Length: 285
Image 1 (tube, one colour):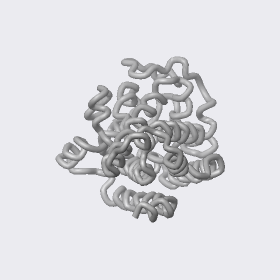
Image 2 (image 1 turned 180 degrees about the horizontal axis):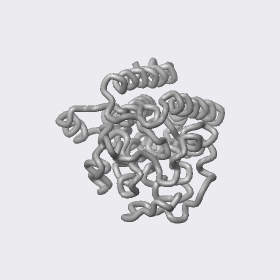
Image 3 (image 1 turned 60 degrees about the horizontal axis):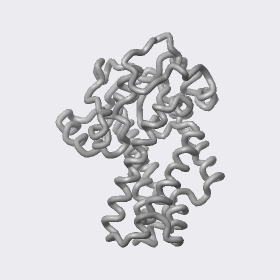
Image 4 (image 1 turned 180 degrees about the vertical axis):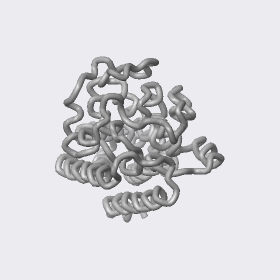
């Protein structure tokens, strides 16, 4: 089974990506949480074009990707889990949890460091919020994320299967919790005890700075609770809250591919500070 997963890693990830995209797209049509404000065709075509561009960039720069680094680390005995004898199931579980924590910390970092916020705001500038928002990242951030993942794998030494499982979970959960879908409130409360739900993560895409600097998790919800970055609900409610970033409200700038690629190089970032309690609407950070 392990050999099959390794040999078919790319096919497995692509199958889960397109399968989850299809499921969430149908769910958004059948039971949307919010009324969209921007043309869906405009957003989907440009958001998915960015995903396609990122895939090409990663394939050119890192042909072996994270799985290749995990195989190299295992072959050379690098990483804690390759050095110490740990039961396979426990090693897989521990690896997935640790990698998820790293993604949480990385997410906090790109909000805390002004230069990195420049790049990450491409993700936040989307004027609506749906399944395609979950894959909308600037190529520079995608490269940075991959390098952080490489470093984590070299230090941790996770089983190759664990890396594949984590990649599948990360992509699937990013699409799930960015979905414009309505969950029964009781189900949402129950699910968010373990994982990040759409209602939980939607708060993170609010224009209000303290809400945007909360709910950083993509998969496990415990990190936000543990580190004090959890907000239960947006102050304006999910239907009325405004998505995006103050000062960046032109769809031609923030929802078209050329504008998204240029966004990190526009405006100032000196006024941005994580968890500020006030926000000037004239501040275009």
